[in-house]
Image 1 (cartoon, rainbow, N blue to C red):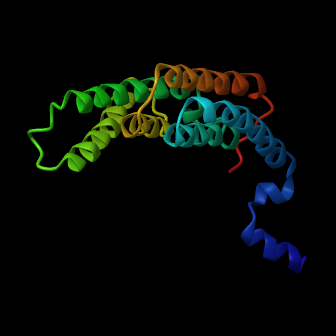
Image 2 (spheres, rainbow, N blue to C red; image 1 turned 180 degrees about the vertical axis):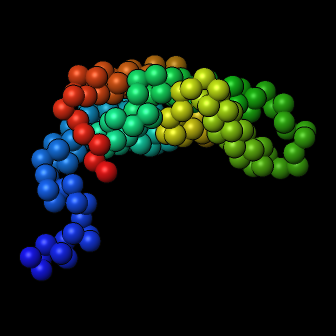
Length: 174
């Protein structure tokens, strides 16, 4: 009993009562992440990987949260891609070059703009998905390709499909 009290403060109470969903959902997230990362190395970069990892966490750790809903998962990343692409093209055109003294400032200002725009458009379209703001930043921060964008959308759709298929078996792990 004394041992249980020590673990109770350290570990989640739901986990102590029933560890099976924690183990199985983490294993499912591992498998999906391994598949994604196998292809990501070929097609894209770290910022996009981080956004996908965060979305995977939401789908498998809190699958019944609003941010895990397909509309928010897919829509949020599409908004993030659009905001990031818009800001990337603003950066490419040099539109802000004369307005700011140093080029480094332009880069981080445009990155911040991508985050702000993605938040604004996600909230007004009811597609709020926090990792998608990272997608917007990732597109601005690194050179991206059409392949990377398509791959990102395919991965997010696959996450939504997996959530739909396993949804009745997944539980919120909090």
